[in-house]
Amino acid sequence: MDDGRDGRVGEAIDDDTVDGPAGDGPDVRTDHLTGATTVVVGSRQGRPNLPADGCPFCVGGLEAPEPYEVRAFPNRWPALGDGRCEVVLYTPDHHQTFWGLGVDGARRVVELWAERTRVLGGRDDVDYVLVFENRGPEVGATIAHPHGQIYAYDRVPPTPLRALLDGVLRPDAVAEDLVVGRAGRWVAWVPEAATWPYEVRIAPVDPVGALSDPGCDLDGFARILVDVLARLDQRFDSPMPYMLWIHQRPTDGGEWPDARVCVFVTPFLRAPGTPRFVAAAELGGGIFFNPVVPEAAAAELRELPGART
Ligand SMILES: [Zn+2]
Image (cartoon, rainbow, N blue to C red; front, side, top):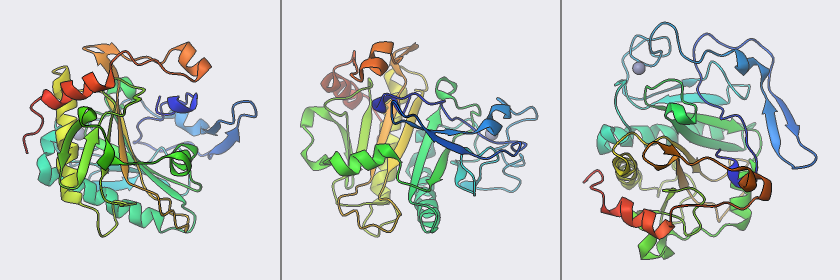
């Protein structure tokens, strides 16, 4: 689904953990007709949908033997080899939401995202670090415990590359009727040509290329993220399933002076209990149809209480 803009559908490479893979490694193939690149990972087909013996992310569980506040560790069921896939635990509280962490808890998460981006991006064999989250079983999350993931690619993947080459990210110039909220140096808005109902982008007004850059306002980032994710849950009075990912500067050693941090949040519902499915004409034609007017989506989200931070 998160590749829908490319006219591709991959397996929603979902969640992870427990018991380890069978051994055959990733096999990268490119379709000669569509140009789509697919990593074939046969070992992941055997991964469990749900752990049989309790939550592996709760303290004392398989992946969290010691008490923690936030935690990152290698994924036992990596979609990419060589330690390129990590799981990030947001809190030891199994039933918490991201926005329920509050600004202090969210700040710990974003600091860990920044640190892991810096560490993984510092490897010679890593050209791009993608922080992301699949939230809810509707988008493939098999474990309810609040967590996200990180992939460290050996190349700059096509979607962020195209954004770098073609995109002009100007959060400071977003029309006011599309703005959902602001916090510190950050703006959250619904894109004018949103593909997804209630799609939100979040970016700093400053020219910051990575969360670990010295000038990055992580406190403002924690506040805006908590607020936006609260609004999405409030929109239909239930946990909003979503996919979230963060574009940052490639770590291939290039300059990339125009690279900007940008968070993409793609909710899965267009109405209470009603998924926004991708239709055949959309994948077949490469032109999408959004039933929710972006300016109306922004107004609806803006008028909710949010996190009141
Ligand atoms: Zn748990």
